[in-house]
Image (cartoon, rainbow, N blue to C red; front, top):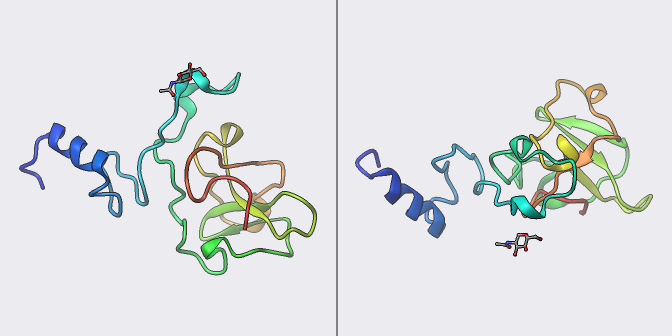
Length: 133
Ligand SMILES: *[C@@H]1O[C@H](CO)[C@@H](O)[C@H](O)[C@H]1NC(C)=O
């Protein structure tokens, strides 16, 4: 690996060959955030967009894995990351929350009380983005 040039690494990660491991940007899961800067909503600073699109716990965390529906607490902390219920009442939908209207970093936490329903759902083109179950 260390014998590959930076350009070769870029080509390999663009082809998806390394999509299951850390890429050159150090993403734990998936790939870098691919954002059309000129199509960003007003007020979102491109400098605040997170580096990696996917949530580091995407698909890994029980009972939040496979986007299983969740009923109960409206917001909480699971393995250091905030999530919240969202969508229609009693729909069971939930999302991982992120700063900067969902474009920024995934919100970290130590306790359920650190997480708020006012936080935005993570947005962008990633499996853990958006509100669903
Ligand atoms: C990026 O967004 C702008 C404005 O919406 C659009 O004109 C342009 O075609 C987009 N570029 C790509 C590569 O999608």
